[in-house]
Length: 419
Image (tube, rainbow, N blue to C red; front, top):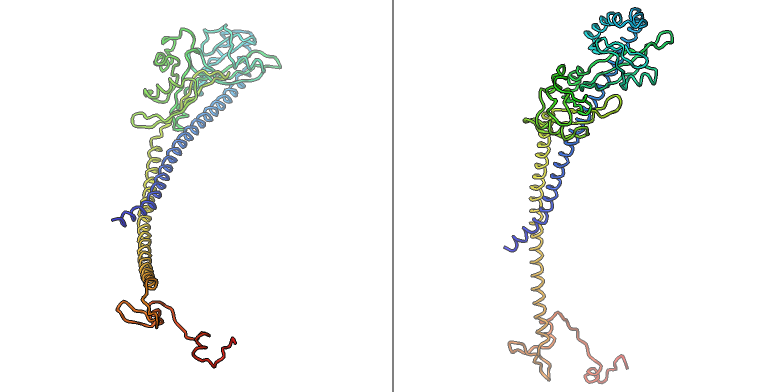
């Protein structure tokens, strides 16, 4: 019983630390896999967000260059020049309207302005009844300050983003005024989604909407009108999703005008979401842009991979456990075999020692010896010569000689060597 308990203790001392080590290693590997998975998803949404930004900037640059080319063509039109120099608004509109309708139909250009050098709007080809107001937009001010063509997206009073190109109209070194083309950029969002595979949501802070803007003012922008009262601080101006799930609405409301990301479960899917401030050409944070990437498939594949790795790790742990359990058992058998052999050897040596000690005790006890002949009486009562008795009860041997005294008595005429 004690031997079995000792065996168990030896095996436990060998196997238990190994089990603990393997379990700790397995846990660390699983945790590491989760960390790697989280970083992978973060890197993926970062990559997608960067790609969206690059595509968006690329589209804006392409559209700006196209509108610049249109303005270079328009500035040389003789009919427009004559009507502008004479400041005949009706003739100028009649000449500009066909050009505007053509570029509107073919290239989505939705705004066409003729602006006086002092910033007064002389004609809007897209809205001829509106004129005489001062243009104080950032792109126009920059074009005046730099005396060069400028472009950029600007937020309109009704919450729509418009890409504007302002072009100084110069003839023979004389500044006649400024030409401006603009296009609303909501058509870019579906193209970006098609290329990148992400969904996009754009919001505008309500502080940038014209004061008193209501649903009637937004009749031309049904999405804006529908979402005007959905949030307290902002309004959704564009999205590629049919509707926003409540989870996404809450995330968007919590992170308005902030930068943040998270993985959000929605209706059995996992959506990786990144929200960041949306800036206009003047650098103002006018709203938020939310990028949404469905990582359900990637997450499922990653989890399968993690489960496979975990299974392999557990299998390796089980293999080493069984191996060391068996190996430690063999070691135990050898140890206890050596132990038993050693115990037997010690017992045998102890027994021999006891026998030797007993023999020494016989010689050290009282010995009956004859006072005359010096014979010793043994335990059986026999008298034995002293030499024989000692020889039988010890390993001592005797050699015989004659001492000088006895030699003088026995051989009186013999002279000893010392004489």
